[in-house]
Length: 230
Image (cartoon, rainbow, N blue to C red):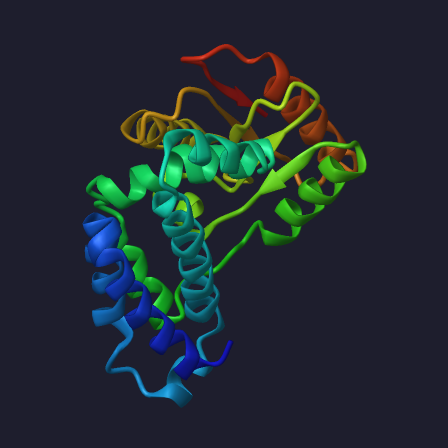
């Protein structure tokens, strides 16, 4: 989808959402005001902004399809067609983001537009995701989850219980501070359980170790628990 198509689709979704989910319409209007005066060539040169916009368009389109279904039974049937991670995202986290106040949204919109968003651990997160899939688990990634909800990955294993995961390589002296901020963020969004994975890049086997911990805790970590592993 080109930059002009993205802008046009945003406007179309705002109009559609205004009668189905006014809170989504307000959120999309906020995003539209953020990008509407950006020239198409400039917007095209900002890949992270475009990727975020495409995610929001996809998620909003799916959410409006769900909300447009005439009965609760039809909505439940639609959710049942999804993977556990998709169901958790569209059935819980995405609507929470639509309806709640997001204090970080203003800050990370600026960072995305300024090109200051950098995914330091992106290669590691990708390796973890690939390993999860190879072991017959599944994963989900979203900019909103990453930047607002301190969640790099949502993963599920055999028991189909999505778990929010943060991955970091911060030094030991900063680790506790970041862990506390992460835990506070998850509580704020009422995410019931999470895993904070800190790794040592000098350890040749750390991806395998992180995936072992992630898959096990996806199945067995109790609600109300925010586990730190390093």
